[in-house]
Length: 253
Image (cartoon, rainbow, N blue to C red; front, side):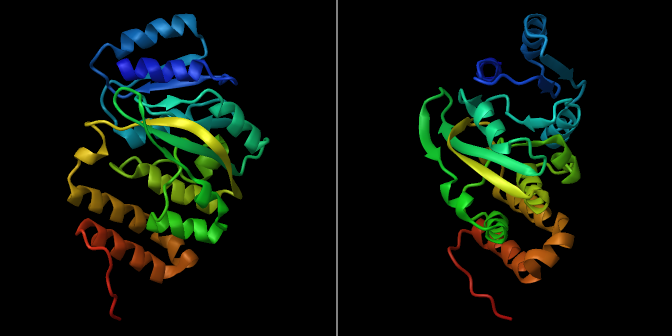
């Protein structure tokens, strides 16, 4: 609840306010719903969706994005923050293109909102489309988050897979990279990404590995064409090696 309040305030105070704010509550049992109802009375652009049971992150996000009426959409987790000009800058980068993804740097923050470090995507933006795909497939560089794109591009890319329990965002970004004509970068902080004890780090390493391998196998039909099966197998091998704590592996054919 305390994080949710700060998250929504960071959206309401944007230099370019969104046309609509959809808050998809995935079965909360704290005071979040009372707070959201009170907000809607003050800010009619806030639309609340109350799930009666927990659908999981992937399904909740997917259904929420599909329900927007705006042309362009961006996302924010309930415990994160937007920096003041995030929406304005990324909307300017898109310049009306329905086939472009816009993204900004990310500031890692702790439970109290203090800056831990800056996560910059300056190197990611310099890559060609093919190299960007390899970087994303191998997870070589930090991966952008909370990008802005058209609802049309999201649907054409397939949206979030409802049965993907972890790494649903990585899965979507691979498919967005397949379908988008270009990715445009804003070298300023867009999102404050909060790291705390209830995050992904609490999940055991085997579950992480299984979910990561699922992402690659779910996309293998088009990945076998570009960048090719050698990269598909090597990316999967790298996930296994990384999960075992090794720094390198020699593949014998």
